[in-house]
Image (tube, rainbow, N blue to C red; front, top):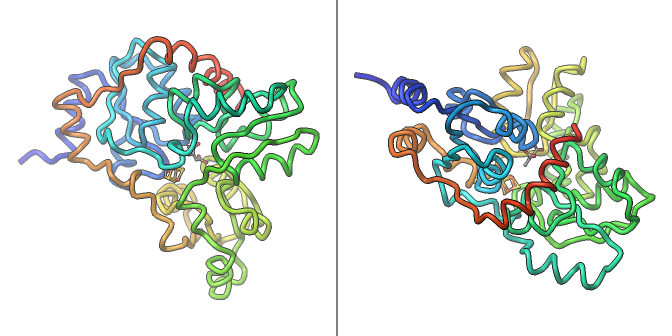
Length: 300
Ligand code: CIZ
Ligand code: SF4
């Protein structure tokens, strides 16, 4: 009998599709993907692919970004209800209202946002280039949406800017506490602590390094240390363990993003069989969200 993996591989060829998976996806999903990465890396691949279709394993805002950057391609999301809760914490209308209160400010938006919110932004960023993007805007006042923790981190790194914070957060990174880190440190006193900038400021303050997911992998690879406490989503364990042989990574047990875990081999197979659910965004939103997203992909 043909396995699900084999059927996915065969259908992917028939459909001339490329499978992209985020670093937080399930290990078996990462293993069958053509590319695994962060939003920035996957957006760049999506914008340049010559495949006919993109199957995006991750959450809806990532698949929307792929569609906006490469509108002629069919973008399929195996789990159409896999929506990042942080993205719903900032609507297009709220951004328009904030602009009325801060007339001289520009809006820098984290990529973890809906297409309609992106259409209201001046520029998008990811966790790996947020500091560089905010440094590069000409305005002093920056409304930074939707992640308050990433916003506070950027504010600490770019003191020349006045960051107007938002109230959004990632429930998974927000749930990681100093105590969680201290408990792991007790068992592993020599471990280096690496935290994602979506973590709370008190957690970032005790971390040895603050990195986006891709930069975590580069940091761990380059380090001569052998043990790492990871303040981020547990899906990162798969690549870190594969790409850093001989090193050990300790995660906080509850740091699991359930929406990222929705995509399974069977939902990918079904998506390839039916070539659905397909991402569809209205023309006006596509047009207005494109420029902020392109600017994001230009700052590595
Ligand atoms: O930008 C991304 O992919 C996210 C959501 C996290 C990260 O740091 O890579
Ligand atoms: Fe959203 Fe947090 Fe899940 Fe990332 S880990 S998709 S920010 S809920």
